[in-house]
Image (cartoon, rainbow, N blue to C red):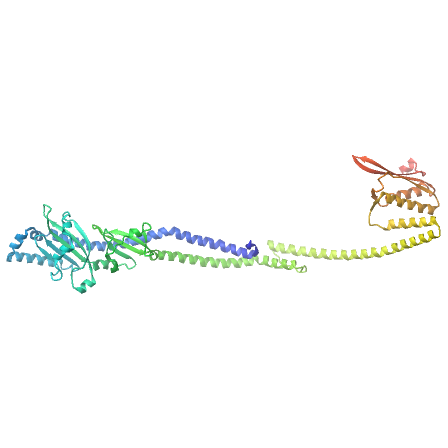
Length: 531
């Protein structure tokens, strides 16, 4: 693995960083995930509170429109004028009737004077007409082309038709530029039998409602009808457009429109078929809370960074002896055995450094000892080589003498010199501690020949070696001391016979070689043997 290439210090630093960074990142994402719904709920709640305030203002305008229409519906004078037939209304058009009519109009004008943003129209079936605006600006009879009165006839008494958005029909060009749209409601005046007597039409400038919607610039608030048509909004270009926000919703309170995510809250306008819709950009709604999370994460990151720096300093201080020990071991590995780490302390690394130094001391002593031993060994080998020079010289000299004697015809002395040479060679040559039984018997033959010459006696050697046992390995000079003892003590340096026998016997089902040596010397008494 690649991580094995790094030092212990680097591994500890990486492990420390992972132990701090992984929980920090996991904590950030878990916190973001857990608080996401809470933040969304909080943003929705805040938007809903704002929308309730806007709803109260818009409801106030709508209630004012309904209140003005109720004044007309409940006015007895107006009901009186719309109740009479068309013929009677045209026939009674005298001065008294005109005076009463003018008084009614004056009272209504005084009553509606403070509502300059609202346009009130009363159209009687019998031809009675009232407006709080000038006929020269707009002829109210043109409503017959704008409003389907047959649909109004189907309404129950005191019910309201929420006609909604219309082009502004009142005022000059400049006024229409300021408020190109109006919102209109219509109500039917009926008698006790349910027949329609007239119609009350109340319109309000859309700009008046738009001012209420623009009170909260961080939100896009719009007034919509039950068909999803935008009746009022800060962006005038969208007024009159269809916006079925449910088609863009991805869950209960969020939608995606024009590749931008919004939080939406809808609130019905009380007593109407209209509703308010608020769109808040998701980023701006949850942005402050996300900013808090990001700030918290940055603070934690800075704190952990400082802590990691401190930790790395501590790790460097703690692992410094290990680093020094590693460099020291590398130098030792290169052959610098004369250096010492000098690392001491009660901790494990200090004890390890001390042990390594002591081990190097012992290794150095052993090297010196081995060097001394090798020097001594070479010296001994040289001495042995020098020592072997003289025996070889003597062997060669003896062989030369033996050949010279043979040339002169002295067979007996030649054999003696040959025996002496063989015995000396066997004595000096220590390369192999084990020799065959045949070589050992031949050595005994040479020895007896020399002893017979020395003491002028005749000791005979009788061999009775079992066939196949002459190649069995026996210790060098195993039999010679026994033969020497027999000649000196058994024969008292006189003649005799010595017999060497070998037998093959089985001991514990294993074959063994038994060698028996006996002579015909004086022997020992039992008393002497006991001594």
